[in-house]
Image 1: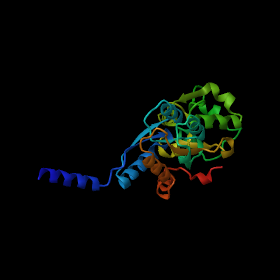
Image 2: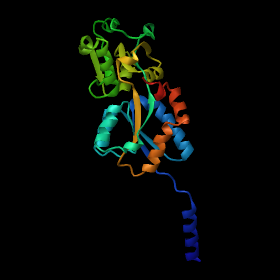
Image 3: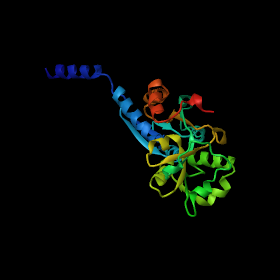
Image 4: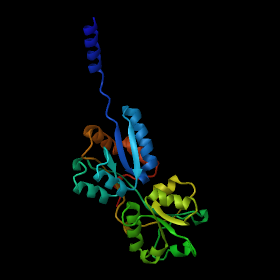
Length: 257
């Protein structure tokens, strides 16, 4: 009886659908709120757990290059995804752009609210006051900071502001400085401004002042679950996932310049 019972249990176990492997998704900090909802929706639809690791795109890319156990990488710019691709750390054919964004100036003072385009004549220095600093993600490494430096340089404002910067490890940290009133102004994404009620948008950077802000996603080369990871990346570009991203202010890639 026991061998028969054991055989029956094995047959039942083999007949059960295999549970999909859990996924670890490394995603840019600016995607945090949207990715949390996307992960919850994916888990509800697939019964597959998703662990999110959120940080600056540069930090995450370096961690993946060093062997961190990520299945999916979602960057806030193409440069860091290219960097990983050159090192063979992502599966190139899995790569897809899943969203785009706008770059904005945010302020702690609600009377500074404006949706006018920033121009070479915009007096950011004057708005900072005598000792205020401009919160910005690291301009040499973090996508939001790179975009900010490029835009401010294009508008002829960078040189005068360099000594008044408050650099941070990621864009959400820059946003927090403004939200807490520790910096009067900051340069962040439009989605960040939308997510933080303690700041107001004080101006929009012209889209032609910097490269298009696109979020590419890809499967990492070292994932033990390439099929599951690929399914998740493909799903991020689906109408269901795009609807979630849209509610958090992200734009579809086709609207990027």
